[in-house]
Length: 287
Ligand code: PAF
Image 1 (cartoon, rainbow, N blue to C red):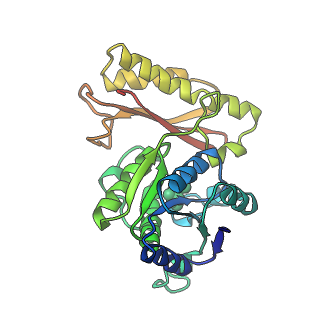
Image 2: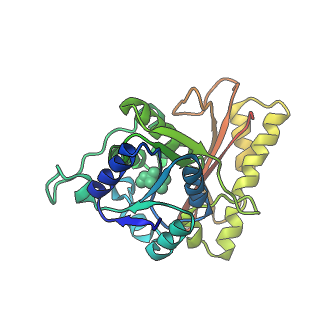
C-alpha cells in the first residue's frame, strides 16, 4: 500500500475513523519531523504492533518559548516522507495552527493548558511553558487520531509522564514508551544533533558518561540525591558546556525539586546547553 500524505488534521481524523471501522488497530507516532533512527524505531514498532501506522509531522510553535529556537529547529520534509515510506508508514499528516485550533480566530492567542503534576520542575524551570505547549498540541493530536496506541521515546522523559497523564485523563490512547536510541558513542539521537559542529558534538558525548557515573554510584549503594547529582555534574565540567540540570527523581513520586531523602528508585535526568543547542537525556538507575 502506498503511503497516504494528508495535509489537515480533519482528513487524518476521517482516515483513522475509517481504519477503526475496518477493525484495524492504529499505531501513532507524533513527531516534529527531521526524523532520525530514534523516530524510525518508534515507527517500526507502531507498524509491527498494529494493523495501520500513522505519523504526524508538526513543529508546534506553542512549545517553543524562544522564537529563535523555533526558527532554528531543523526541517527536512522531503527526507522525512521518504524515510516514513521506506519504514512502512501508512499515513502521514501535517497541519497548521489554524487547523489544529479552528475555534481560535486569526490573530488571537491560543491558550495553552497546564502540563499538570509531572510538568513541575526540571524542564519547567528552564523552559517555562514548554510542557504546557506540548500537552496542548498532544491533546489535539490524540483527539485527531482517536483510540490507538501512541509511541513516544524515553529521551523526553518528563514529556512521557505528562502525555501519559493526559491519556489517562481523556481515556485514550494507550501510551507506549520506547527506549532511547543512541549513537555508538552513547549520545542520544536527537533532531538537534545536526546543529552541533564537531567540537560541540564531542562535548555532547559527555552526557551519557555522566549518566553512567550516576548509574555506577547507584550500583555501589549510593542513594543520596545530592551525591548522585554531584557525580553527574563532575563529568559535565567542560568549557563550552553549560549544565541546566543534572538531577535525580523518583519516577513514581515526582517532585519539582531534588528529593531530600534517600531514594528507592531513581531516574537521572540531564539538560545542557552547548552553544545555542539544548540537549536532554536520562537513564533509569535502579534497573
Ligand atoms: O517529542 C516531540 O517531538 C514533540 O514534543 C511532540 C510530542 C511531537 C509534540 O509536539
